[in-house]
Image (cartoon, rainbow, N blue to C red; front, side, top):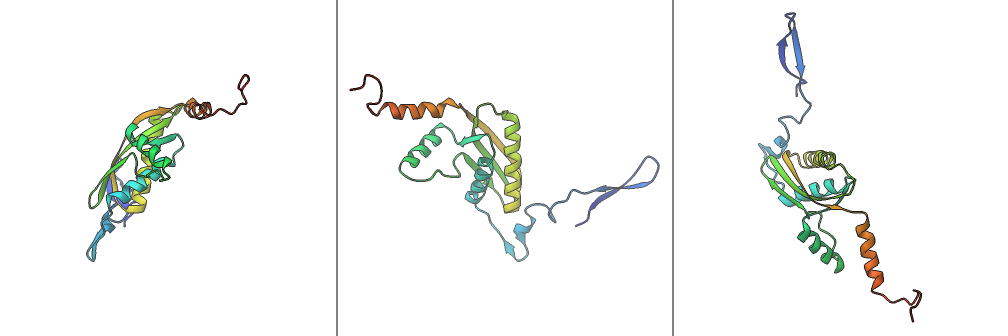
Length: 170
């Protein structure tokens, strides 16, 4: 790999060298198809990596649309872990991938800044781990998680139980 891309002539008539961005030899995805064979990375692998990369960002409360989150809650009640691919869809080709994410963000977060940080983290994770070029990461914010939403749920649970500790309870 060469560290220079081209020679250009400056205004003074001297030759200047323009540095090339440091990338994989042949770009991302080049190592997946070689003369000795091809490596195919399945959609589910890329979806899991993208989902984990998005979830590790501070400000992402949950992933998926309303129906997907409701199904995830039901799965949690019966003891099945939440799917890391919930809220993630991908299209994977031989050398490139496109990622779509559905997010629920914490109230107070600057959504454009959070989306940029999530996008960068997902691209870095997928390109580093899979060697695929990520052509796009589309983010759809479905909801905003309010701080008092959790307190309301806990209160609903305790209201249904008669502990006899309230004044006037017999």
